[in-house]
Image (cartoon, rainbow, N blue to C red; front, side, top):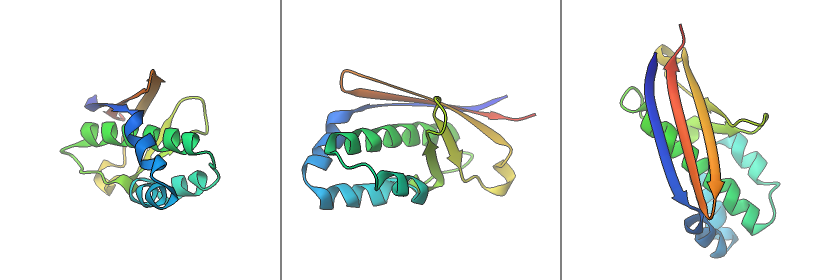
Length: 125
């Protein structure tokens, strides 16, 4: 059974503008938005354009996950980790114990300076 659906669209120019302000702004934004595991991956991304794309993808999918999970759980930035271990984005969510059985499906698309994230949360039976 589907518990929630969330979608978010983001103009990547917003994140590119943050990164263009310099490393101090980029790192502050990254600390705020990324989970510890994501922050470790982010540390190896050196080019500003790639940093902005990395941050934009995570911002967008986390916003979509927040919308899909609410009101069952109010997720925070660090509760969600985007893992790109496979071709399809995988969201790892730190659920409250009574919600640990929920499954998360995510899709991410980007084109023409926009990123769209779509998240479906379902109850595993």
